[in-house]
Length: 425
Image 1 (spheres, rainbow, N blue to C red):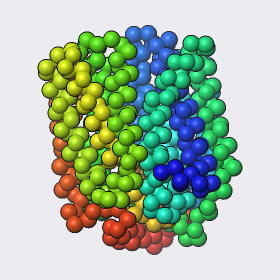
Image 2 (spheres, rainbow, N blue to C red):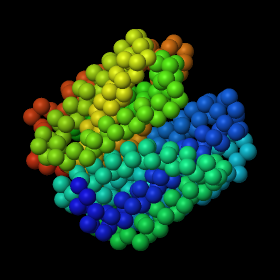
Image 3 (spheres, helix red, strand yellow):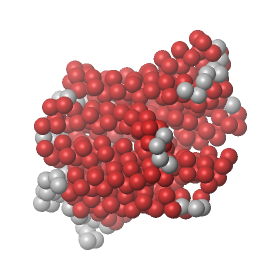
Image 4 (tube, one colour):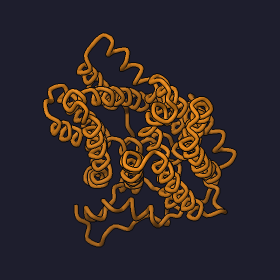
């Protein structure tokens, strides 16, 4: 898997991704502490609002921004987005009101909505070989999982010697280093004629329209729902399971979240071999089967609530949920690559970025608000039903004869949009 790092262009881009992720992890910890300083017991409401603003920026702005910057060279777009993120992070230590958090987070996440899809759509251009691209996806998934484990630990170490405001400086440094690495990278120029013509509306909605016309991508849309359900359950309600349901000490929350991350990491490491042997459809739909099954188990834990037996069952279920998520998330970009051309690729990656985050706007309130109002059992049950519905949609949408992967029929040309008769520059 590490052999893909021999490509110097990808090596620098991957390094930029790593340092930006670490910076983002520090931001998450520091932002929570800032919210507590400003709002005290209402810090949860501040964080919930900030996360909602983040998702709305991802869902609403990403397609529009991509349509606006599509004709610009990739490197200046990526560097400018990183510099904008660094500038917004630098504002956070000086915030004195909760509303200021919302403004800064909106601007910062708007820059992320510019950077992330553009970055993801660039990797297939750098790594033409399908096997190399699969290895890169595994490394990327591994990086996200490692960040979830390493950043909180790094933040805890830094907080023992400095104040949380200095964590924001670590975030600034991460984005600046990322910008520097991208600036030093020899990024392949876009092929002549690779930009899409047409009105701003045509380009903004292009990715979503391609998604709807391609059965594999419709299945991916349903799989995004499957992934959003356990992610919300684990991130929002793990503390409730650990502290209130199972009556475990605070430190055990870290163990529960670590099991979720380790399950995802193990699958990410083995993904290239699994995908080469079984194909995309089998691997991804296995995850769509595993996740609802494990979530039924999580609902059972809510009802039994036996501290000792329930604790070990919870750890096993969180491991399975992490593994199930990774079987879907790791190969997802392969479907986008196979269904796109140089012309349509940025739009498909942006559509996936936007549509996948839209699913969290549904799952997070189910996990948090429903759990608080009606109890954890209702929240777990509702999220389980959501996962089952998404799984059913994925199975029905993906043709049985299409295994996916390198040997799958190439359907991309069928979905290339024709430019409008009178394109708007």
